[in-house]
Length: 150
Image (cartoon, rainbow, N blue to C red):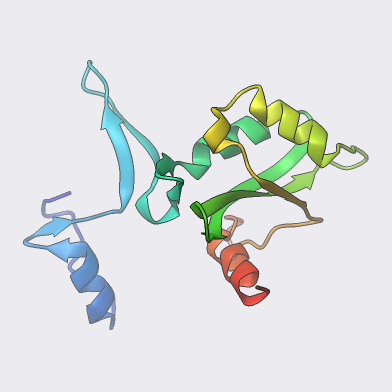
């Protein structure tokens, strides 16, 4: 983005400001596309993209599929280090109250709706997911926890 409405920088954070503001342009980190009619669509954030086996995988696409399952209350997908593939896809899932589903059942569901390379290799069921004060799921906190437990 560029224009008078763009911020001048992050408060007391010159390093982060330099990373996102270059030559008057704000690099948001959003990944999107424009359709033939000129409409823009945001598909995910660059820093959340998973690169597994050379494939670019957008967590949001997988999360949307998981949210469509009747048993899923919340879901977040992250890329975790993998020696062979670079990263591997892991889904953290909170089920709706009084509902059960196995990892195998959820995996079969995901396989029926996603390309094979996008299907999570690991599912972790949790009672809750870490969130910000406004309720946004903290994907980075889950990744940090995973790396700390390796």
